[in-house]
Amino acid sequence: MATDARPLNILCLACFNTGDRFIERAKERGARVYLLTKETYLRKKRWRRDLLEDVFAEPDNTPIAHTMNTVGFLSRTLRFDRIIPFDDVEVDAAARLREHFRIPGMGDTRARVFRDKLAMRIRAQEEGIRVPDFVGVIHHDDVRAFIERVPAPWMLKPRTEASSTGIQRIESADKLWSTIHELGDRAHHFLLERYLPGDVYHADSVVSEGKVVFVEVHKNGAPPFDVSHSGGVFSTTTVERGSADSKAITEMNEQVLTRFGLLRGVAHLEFIKSRKDGQIYFLEAGARVGGAHVADVVEAATGVNLWAEWADIEIDKGEVPYHLPERRSDYAGLVQCLARVEHPDLSAFSDPEVSYRVPDPYHAGLVVRSPSFARVNQLLDEYTRRLTAEHMAVMPHYELPPLR
Image (cartoon, rainbow, N blue to C red):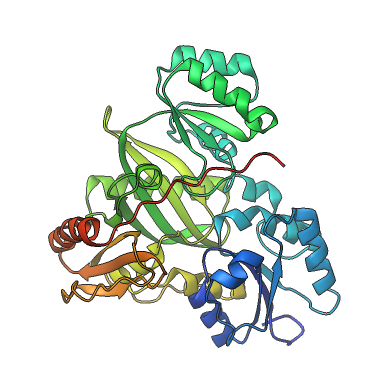
């Protein structure tokens, strides 16, 4: 509740994730929740208007200065107590808005290392956390030195795009320099990184007052970059509990979150285990719930809903000690792909371990749960083959629009 005994007002910024469980828990706690989205997603997403006090939408490419004006206008009659970004792309905007309107929460400087891939790599390197070799595409002599030292191929990555959007695999120096030339004034918004073949993992955490109080470690099937660029089935599964990989990633996850200074909330971190040297490398960090129904996998395995816990932590703001709910230690996994029809019929996937069916249009996906690590992986292998054969569609990979 707000300090003046009125209900807490929470402004959520969202496009991709609807954050239903966050909204539900906040309403249960007596808060009033408002949504600010973009016009495209106002139409495309199923928002919980029954729980939201109001929904506002801006044009898709609205600059942050205009968003500030929008929130400033709304603030004439509404006193917002929290601003929450449901998506990775909204973390910057939420931080800027908190700073400008003096609202509690993570501000610009701290948020930067949870959005900017160059900033997070530099910070991790300074803290002694292992990262793939990298260089910012800023000073060309630094780029030349990097490509002389690190053999091709390389990964050219946008510094602030979400997921695998805009990432390119570059095979030669000629191709690199032609791409940098094409980027023009956008080039400094990119970094260049050693291509590191390996298995991709993610750790999903709850953080309260600077301490990691909950973490689940998962391993992806095909790397997200390969799925987004070449098509296929995305899968992720709980890593075997007590394994060396689980312990190493849990430890590195805590190092990153502690040294990056996340005070409270949730986090989604990605790591890669190199096939060449067997070492774990930190890839990136997000101060939000992971996308692609990762929260449903976590809940299936543990009974803990990341969205709901995030709402509690934001509402209490450290004034009430946080208590993690009782948790299970089962295993869970997700398989998901683009589908050929809007609402694919997945009734043939009828094993009792199926705990959740992805409701998104033009997607086919399921979450399975079992006390057995082997059974979950057996089902994921089988379901991946079946989804590929019976439901999978492939669409062209989204590329970044030209510089405006």
